[in-house]
Amino acid sequence: MPQTRGRFITVEGIEGAGKSTCLTFMRDRLIQAGRAVLVTREPGGTALGEELRALLLGHRQEGMGEDAELLLMFAARAEHLAQKILPALARGDDVLCDRFTDATYAYQGAGRGIARERIAAMENWVQKGLRPDLTLLLDLPVERGLERAGKRSTPDRFESETVRFFQLVRQGYLDLAEAEPDRIKRIDASQPLVEVERQLAQVIDAYPEYDKVEFG
Ligand code: TMP
Image (cartoon, rainbow, N blue to C red; front, side, top):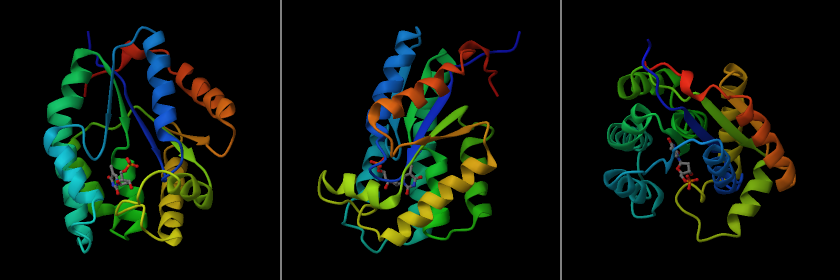
């Protein structure tokens, strides 16, 4: 009998796409379906990861180089995998993660211009074979997202980036979704909430075989 594990589900999108609302909706739906769910986020999710998040998002390290930024994202991810994600999946719990490596391809790759192959090398090193089983990409025009995000708190180091940067990030995400349509499901996040939730429910309910994921 192959060993089974929980499902690894990630949520992605530019700032202001509505990830938090989506995560709550998804968590509730999985729990209703009888699943144990770990909700977590990147960068972050562990004590070290949260400290790295503060460095990455705060304004103390304004001139951080793009390679340092990339390596810190993966340092946080390595710790997150070892301390939380892999143990939860091995227990059979589902993991619902607010961003993962697709964000690195979109922000550090498409946004900052780091070559795809360099990110892929880090991905293979840190994650070995592990990839998300399902990724929900909340997509909406950059202006709409930034308008929503701007109404929240003081902009962090990423939120302070230009519209052009976020256009590259959005396109980066769309390119990933096009390349991996089975895993990455694009959700039209510019729609009213009830319609977004309908789309989310449709995607999640199409993945009923939660216990059949082989450990690899
Ligand atoms: P958020 O999760 O609260 O949206 O903030 C995290 C920020 O970090 C967001 O601007 C995207 C950015 N980020 C990257 O640039 N690369 C990554 O690999 C991850 C996980 C996040």
